[in-house]
Image (cartoon, rainbow, N blue to C red; front, side):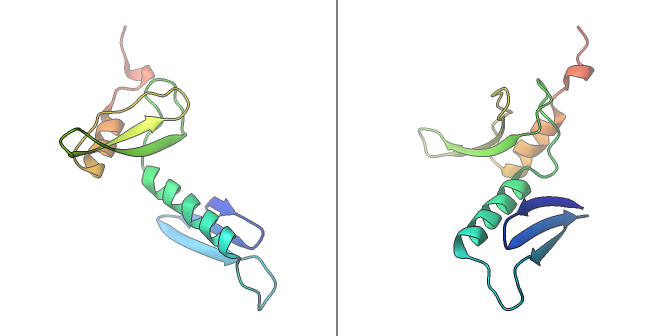
Length: 112
């Protein structure tokens, strides 16, 4: 089980694709709105990069999914490594950008 968020009142864990939310506060108390927002953001960040391989250049695991627009208004999706800054191939569809990232050769696969 992997914990993707733990606050004062709420914890979110993921196991085999299932999401578990646990209320950590006293019985009868609710979860504060700011904590619920932080939990939702943590879950979205986790789900956007779930299934991505580490960075092909530095091996970093802190990745960010990105969306950009060109001058014609076309949307492009990609993956960015927050450790070294490399950007993967820009694709028209999110799952294509994620697949293209995973297909990039990793440092140990490059023959010099």
